[in-house]
Image (tube, rainbow, N blue to C red; front, top):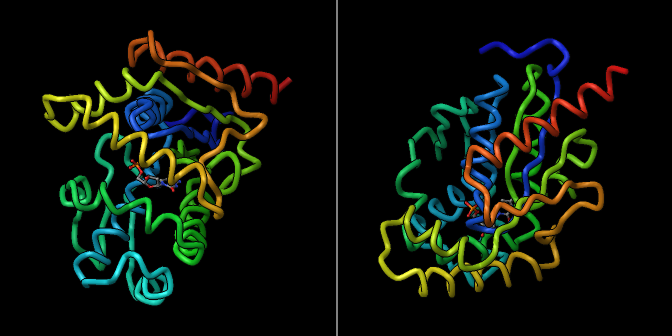
Length: 231
Ligand code: DC
C-alpha cells in the first residue's frame, strides 16, 4: 500500500515497557498505513550481540563505549520483513537469544551507545519521507520529541509475562515476569534517557484488548491527528 499523501513525513512514536505488545502493534500500524517501521530495541540488541561476540566486559561502560565505535548497525524498515545487520551480517535471530536479552539493559544504559544509536535512528527517520512508525522506550521523549503521534503502550505485568513467554516458547511465565521486572527496573532508572511516557503521549492499556484492537486504536489516533493537522 502506498502512503496517502497527507501521511507522508509522519512520525508515529510507540514507546512502552518490554512485553507490552509494542512490536506487533508498531508493525501492524505501519503495515496498515503503508509506513516504514523501525525497531530501536533491535538496534540495542544488535549492539549487545556484537559486544558479546567481541568478548567486551559488559560491566565496564568505558570498554563498551570504545568497542561500540567500530560496530556498524543497519536496520531495514519494511514492516513485513524488518532486518537488522551488524557489519553486514544478518543478526535477526541471534539478537533474540537469552544471552542478549539478559545483557541488553547494561549496554542500553551507556550514554555513548545511546548517542550513537539515536543519531542512526534520527537519520533513518529523516530518510523516511513516506512516514515511519518507530518503537522503543525513549522515542517520544528523546529521539523524536516533535513526533505528531505518540503512543505509550502498557499492559499489566501478568499479561506482559504471558505474552513474552508465549513468544519465547517458555512454559513458566513466572521466570519471564521476573526477567521483565528486572529489565524494566534498569531501563526506567538509568540516567541516560530512561523509559518514560512523554507528557503528550496517549496512554493505551492493551491488557484486555486484542492486537487488532490496539492497532485499530492507534490507526484512529493517527487519522484524528492527521485530520486535525489538515484543518
Ligand atoms: O524492545 P526490546 O525488548 O527489544 O528492547 C531491548 C532493550 O533495549 C530493552 O531492555 C531496553 C532497550 N531499549 C532502549 O533502551 N531504548 C530504546 N529506544 C529501545 C530499547
